[in-house]
Amino acid sequence: QAQLVESGGGSVQVGGSLRLSCITSIVPANVHCMAWFRQAPGKEREAVAILRSGAAYTWYTDSMKGRLSISEDLTKRTVYLQMNSLKLEDTAMYYCAMGNAWDPWGGRCGVRESDFAYWGQGTQVTVSS
Image 1 (cartoon, rainbow, N blue to C red):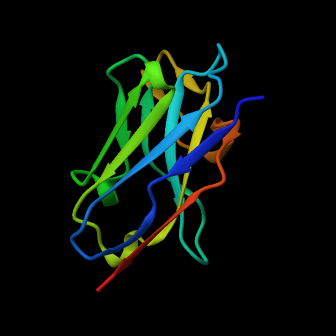
Image 2 (cartoon, rainbow, N blue to C red):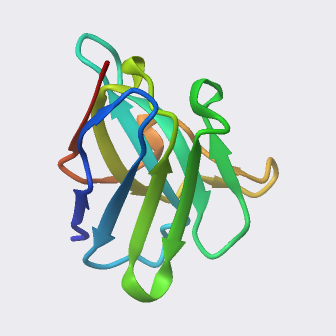
């Protein structure tokens, strides 16, 4: 069973930056997509950044596009999320996830929670003014 452990969350002021990390114990052979989701209090969990492992494909949610960068280090089994120009509304619990929902026809990963079978426990990001 794959385990994911996030780190790097914390408190930051508006306009600041954070780099989240997610290390995985193993990467199952059928996993193609790595993602970061977030969930703010009272809101649904939403995908913010996704990549296809070992490929050039990335996806970002519109609300954070231009402020995020997702990357991976396959040798370390680690996925990163660089977040810049953080806003108050970025305050949330951020989760790392792995899944196999690669659509070869559309050339993209799924963006729903149900597209990802493996999840970390989350790391809190709090942005203050």
